[in-house]
Length: 169
Image (cartoon, rainbow, N blue to C red; front, side, top):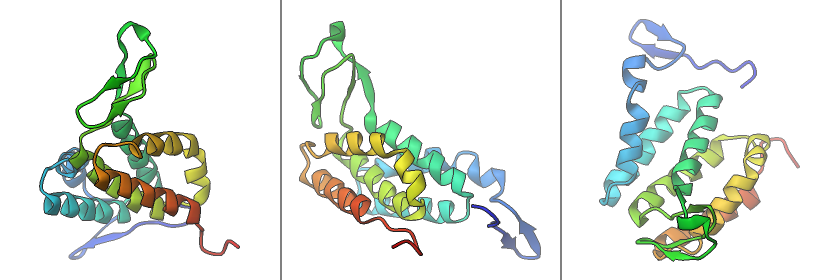
């Protein structure tokens, strides 16, 4: 992000960032579309998110990654603070005082597709800062009841392991 400035041109007008009327509710709308049951809606939402992030500062991509991980973690309080495993509608919960309840397959697929794009945009040093949250979250989703979610998650593990920044050995 050092020295890189995003400049957007709309006709004769040049802006340093997307206008607020576009960005104000954009992420909320796109996150909703990423959870849609229809695949083409999720795919177009992921493409729109990608276009948005390509025109936003790097810090916005970092914030987006944190939001996606938070949504995937979908933390719930376990009853009695117990350590028992409970069955969820879409997968399993890893029982602890604050358990991760796996989100439904459609939403998980949409969010994981966004993570894939975000991982390509972020430098390795930023990904390493989020390493623990990424590995723990992806590990949970490898046990999702939907095979498409497990496959998407496996691809993310591969992407993480193969991540290389331009100019690195």
